[in-house]
Length: 503
Image (tube, rainbow, N blue to C red; front, side):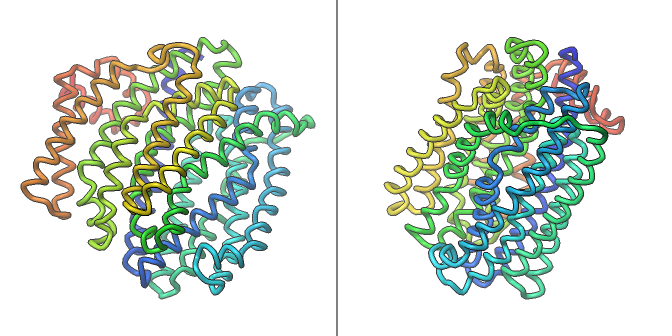
């Protein structure tokens, strides 16, 4: 595949996944706005957040990171080797079903102690027992998604994500409105994940038909084991602050802190969408052209990550207070400072997804283990030092340390200057433009702060950022020619208008 063709496929795939992410996060925001207002107490908001953390824990632990290995092997083999690819898919199906059953059983068996220790009472055991069904589904359907990702069916992946998010959150909201509380939320999660599993199975089974060569699980496990350890550590890094908030503070404190963490998850839309596309593309490129060929792909991708991600992050930091009050209510305003801290740290780490996918495509998964271990130690140490005295602000500071470490440590293992893989010039200009934008928004908020003016703050920030991009001459006609190559016909007018304004 030529570089231009690869770039178009990458951009188109990322646009599918970005749209899915936008729909998913919008649905999540609407759901959480209802949950924050309809659950009886802040402690109940914290308990629902804890249940969500536990689903991810059992899913991460139960999958053994095999989905990532499946994506790697299918994309590396290529669809030309149909029997081998079909063999990997069938092995993936068997392994996924068995591991999902084991994960659900672990959740069910441990429900009593977890309810008593984390949720505060054994009375919540029934919630965790019901949750075990969702654990089974949440563990299973990523195996199907991994197969689709391996053959770059990003449109199908986006469809599954959108259907899942809409059903999951709609049923959860209905459960809250009808007075079923946390039981209604779990019902929504379960029905959404049933839809995801069935739809993903249908799409993947349709894509992998015909005869299959028998495949050995050992190569998959050899690739996935270091990554599995890293995923467990990554989970611990991403959640240890919230578990410690429960242990060192309370469920109510988690109820306030978790929306700030969830809000920064919106920032991952850009990086996750591009990362999901880059991994199979880089694996295929390395398999055909070697490691050197990864540089062009990563440098192009980094430019668009920086242009979109940095202003989103600093814009979120600038509007943290009105954002929290507008979406989840006045009682959550204490989460504004933690949100701002996390968003600023995120702005500095946009390159992480690019670096990680380079190392992943090269098979250097052990790097993630060491990086994750260092991040976890830093997070735990700082959490114990800061949460007791600073509460959620301390947790945000501890979490920010892991964000920075997760960027710096993998950079050391590239073996070459980062400029060969990243467009550092664009990063510097995007950071400068975003800082000017943030200062302008803060200035307006200092004059008049209101949750109802949030659209005004966003609009002003966007105009200032676009003005700075034009002044700094960050984008060129080639960038817009590239964009026109993959957007739908109706959107080309928007691209043309943006070109006239920014170039």
